[in-house]
Length: 363
Image (cartoon, rainbow, N blue to C red; front, side, top):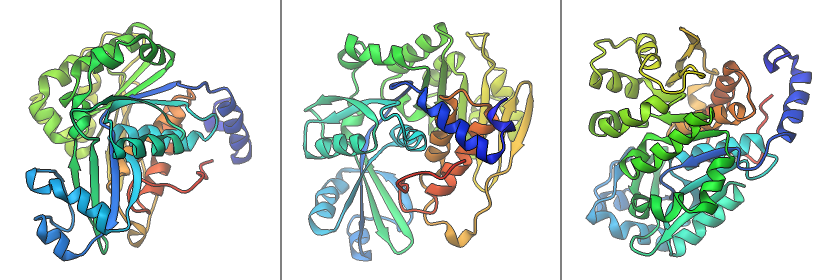
């Protein structure tokens, strides 16, 4: 009997049983680690650094002093962030026990923010193995909160400095890659180390393990098309939202804006491991999630939520993937993976930042 056929009571019991069989390092993520720094600021602070109340930007030279100022003058909260790290962190939260099911690789600086990031990853029970270097400071993302708005300023810094030869290729680190059964990398990492992604993706493909990739942002399909399409034949599960899907379709000359049709076209792109049919999952905010099931496309309704309960939608995509991965690594059916994704996203959008309560109540 699959989990889908259980009654709620036996489903919960079965979930508990399954979780006991999970091994450490079964889920592997690699990406751009950022220390999220959240603080309430005033309009003068936004004006000083030329920020809009609800925006996401990359830090420029004029924003460099912002990070020190926000820490020195405000009451700040720190969280382990960055897209892939958010997703594996949420997967670990959904799983709960054992700790360290999720492994994470990325680059940080040998500095105070790096120490905080290591501490926050440990608190989230993620087995983070960072490549530490002293050329660039640890990547940070300042969330400047004014009322209901958040202005995000990301300084990738060290995250851009990941080095395959000095980290991924090291035997002790590579052995952690080999321990995993499910791999997930956000498309953002294509801008940093496409050769690292390719090495992991090929390993997954040759060993019939599951490799997931996220389209992450329209600019990835537009400006990093070559590395993206190099890794695509190894991708077993591709994630994205409706905007990213539409941009990908346009760049690939699909000549359609129909999300279901785009999903089918992406699924049928060339693939090396013929033992696994590619799965395509496109979220659409409050609209139904579209996914390929076999050769068909199905829609999965998201959970209802009162618009007044939505606090912050920024981490919704990362949360969806995290929920999805938490069930995937337990070999649950696709429907269960999507249900868990919807649950996790629904929890995250009710809170500020990519944060969550102590325990999930997903049944």
